[in-house]
Length: 338
Image 1 (cartoon, rainbow, N blue to C red):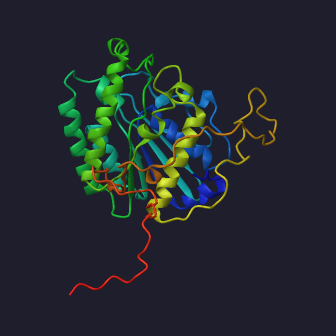
Image 2: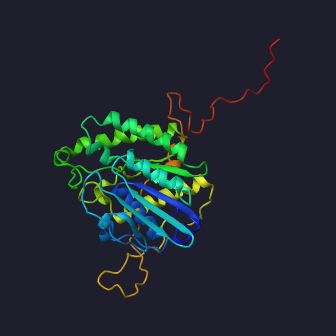
Image 3: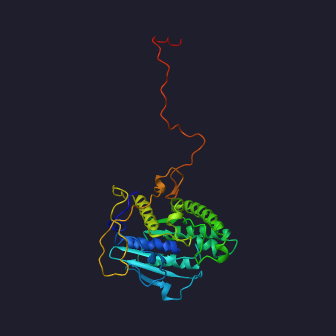
């Protein structure tokens, strides 16, 4: 997979309105995208950890966050926006996949001056940890209501990409997860997988795109998952952005440049302790080897609303080269049957 430069990302998203909806993991998706639209460097740990700050890399806090009371409740709100001459990126923090607040968000997007060209969304962890014990019926019902409403609100030209929830660790210490849930982290891991199955199936049913991030990062929790068991580091988020942009380019029919997958253009992020000093672009160690995008896998990945590959059946085609026969041809022509 080719890693796009900031200049190429700006070209891909030129005059596009991008909306990101979701929890703190999706907020990091928004932040890395905003950073990549401006320069070729990674997020810093402090930028990943920050919550509700007034500004981040030329964006602004529109509502919620530090403009109000900071808390970890289900009514926490945060709306951010990055706007340049040719790009508009907005983030809405969600604590549930569908509720009255989401209806207000969709109404705001529908009534706004600009209609979204790309919507990136996920809601899972809050839904399966912070509400009633018997959460599955409400989560599945809310998924059905969400995608049905999105089909009515979004224009036909708008591309919606549903991100499956990222894997969680064996031990969850993040404060937004209730203490009794933290003690049963193994159950949360299975809940996430089951929730991804339901959400992917519902998105596919309504013809929306699905990017299976859980599949891509399932083997990398030990190295790139942070100690709280929920959030991921800057390298994982940069790879996530590249997966997402490759998916978007494929959906829009944009041909990506052909070059080596990893270059020497990534810098080590903003300077620490000397903000006025201009840093030279120093190459980082090679990026981790992640699996290729879903449309290059030989597994039945959901892509653009329908499965691109069919699951193998018992009658698999013979993939080896057929052996030549050891029998020699007859020296005499055999008589034709009468």
